[in-house]
Amino acid sequence: MGLGYTSPVTSKKTFPLSIQLTVITFARLLLNTGLRMVYPFAPALARGLGVELSAVYQLITIRNFSGFFSPVFGPLSERYGRRLVMAGAILLFGVGTAVVVIWPAYWPLGITLVAISVTKVIYDPAMQAYIGDTVPYKQRGKAISVTELAWSGGLLLGAPAIGFIIARWGWQAPFAWLAGLGLLAALALRRVLPDSNGGDGQPTNLRQTLRLIRGYPVIWAAGVYIMLAMASNESLFIVFGDWMEVSFGLSLTSLGLTAGVIGGAEVIGELFAGWAVDRFGKRPIIITTGLLNVLLYALLPVTAVSLTSALITLFLVFFAFETTVVGGVPLLTEIVPRARGVVMSVVMASFALGRTLGTLVGPFVAANFGPTGNGLTSAGMMLLAVLVLARWVREDNA
Image (cartoon, rainbow, N blue to C red; front, side, top):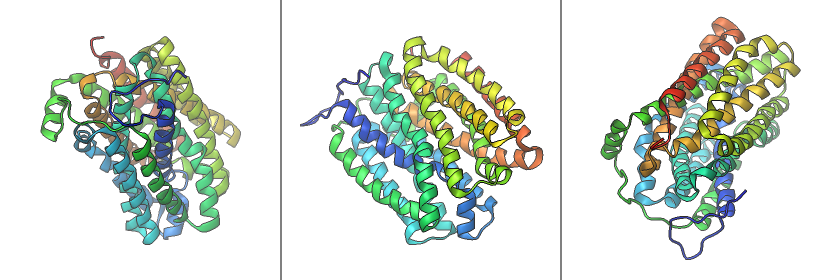
């Protein structure tokens, strides 16, 4: 994949970028598994806790809200270096997931979910900034797509494993596995990634960060684009587990395998994005697949008349969505190159805002208008996202 790049960092021993990306992606796989498992298994968590399903949805909303603090954490990697921040974030993940194992109850689950969310808004901007520092822009799509395999892997690999673990050992058991593997991943990041210096004239505190954000309207436009795109997907995905369980009578294991189908669509979308955006350009691919996603969202309620047709349509929906989002990440790392960590922290906050909006809108629409309402709502939000990107989001000096 042409990953033989060197990094502008210092270290006594520098591992090849392919090995660095492997460790980075594994750590992110654990993180995304913990983040995404609550969707297909929200009913199982609710039953295990003895609470209503809506109570678990409320925890998801609280968790997503914590992502708004991403701009607070964004300057960390500029000040202390990418490696230290990434390893520290995954260490927080390991400790946070252990909370609900030690104390298996409703609010400890909330603490664990918030810890996972906070970890993501620290880890992902530092990771994406590191790749932006290391890989040339014309080939950055490939490197980004490798790390994005961890997102789809959270469903394709993580969800079936989570379903098996819950069925065998109970609802809190997956968190024990994630805690142990998270601590190992933190050690691996500390060992494999090269050391780096912070600062370098970039924003290193919240005041400087806010000043920079105010000075670049493109950052605001990027945030709106991501917020709308994520809200479109989240408003559908949050009701996915309940919809599939009720409509088609799926078991826990079948739910995990169904989520794996979506994960497979995301893998293909990520790989396609990594190939296509470097070859044909970031913006043309993103706009095209975004408009395709609009059409598929609108068609979902019509085509999902059986389990087979529902899975086919969901596969196409998530393929188009993942291509759109993953293809956009290398573009966003280049809109203000001198402050990538800050830009990506704003992007992560927008991810969180979009997820929160989706978790609020999705259940309400499903309860009042059914799947048709969810599909049309998602289509409308994605259409607005594509229009914002096409009009205002461009690379620096483009």
